[in-house]
Image (cartoon, rainbow, N blue to C red; front, side):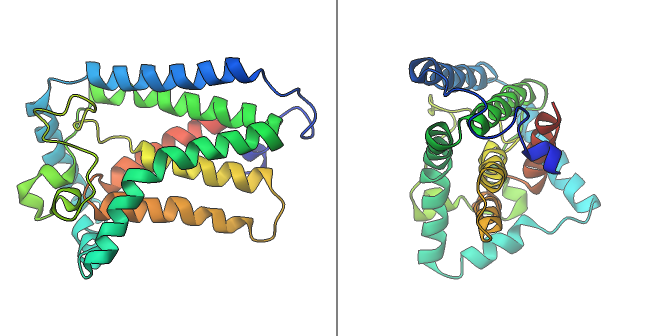
Length: 234
């Protein structure tokens, strides 16, 4: 594990800090390519719902806990479910950006490593919407799950047929979870505090939120973790 989370090349000062303009362009370019790539995978709604039914059945065959068990816990209190929606809508991207900015300023070597891993995971995530379009569980009436974002707010998605900003049929993998896990791994690798393992709370909370809000299946998170593990070995 240490080999996977320690970037090669020596200590924090082993490499110079990359030019900030270049890094901004790289990160912005990656984000734009990812958003456009997901949009290009639109138009396979029927396949997305068929795959969703299969995914739900596969999780039951694997005896994974039902997503409804997590959602029922959130729905016990309106404030809790609202906070879960807020976490889903507002923490994912800003937390990753702050993570990269902090590494860039304080741990340049770790920054280069983390940026490369995140880029690999994000690029790999572009493939699945083309090969495995997947409707999220909140869209499957048979699951008994509700769209907590729509019912309790805030919601980051509009109706699928009018939402021109995102591809809601690209549930797998969950980059919410993949990025959150990388943030935790990166901060654990880059810091020396005895409490640094607490950074794992971020992916743990994220996993609870993405499943409890019915935006993702358990296997979406598993797929993201597998992709991240592969990227860490390269």
